[in-house]
Image 1 (cartoon, rainbow, N blue to C red):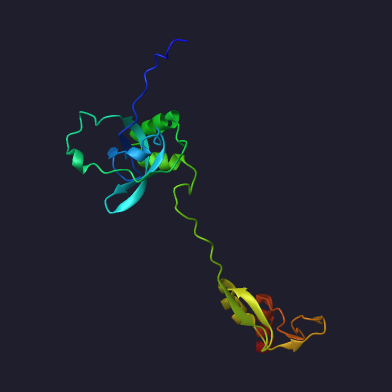
Image 2 (spheres, rainbow, N blue to C red):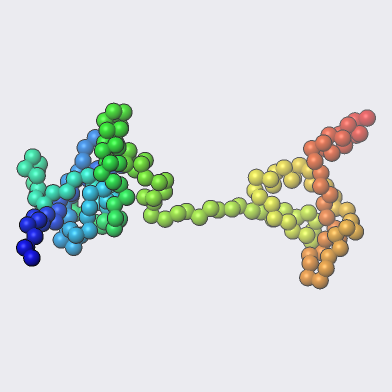
Length: 196
């Protein structure tokens, strides 16, 4: 069997990344030795940008620093981590988003972020908070009501009256005294009766 003549590509030492920031340029980062086998075209990665860390998108890979870069090698920062084992962004999506950004005078990094599913770049999902307050129908019977409806309930609350339809079983809350349900039309009728 003849040895394979396929030329092995050297692992990328540098990556050009576009970031979801309002700048029309890419940024060059150094790929640390331990991440060189993980980085692929279209992969998301965490990169330092100023004082913060943001998600960038790999748009070009270089085994050596490109000759057209005119700044000090020592100033190039390392990427922090590669987020995707397999890139979410295909070469076709890279071309499409670059064309779209050029055509609409937008930013390539923001186009790439918009091309991905919503929320994919967030660190954590914030849990929904539900606000609830206790509204007392009588001195003894608490009822949970949302904060938005508390003011409405205050408008129509009245004195408690007994009602035999709320017979509680063992372990149930005593519901022998409760506030009748009042609607805005009940209030209008009361006002009309009071004014004759």
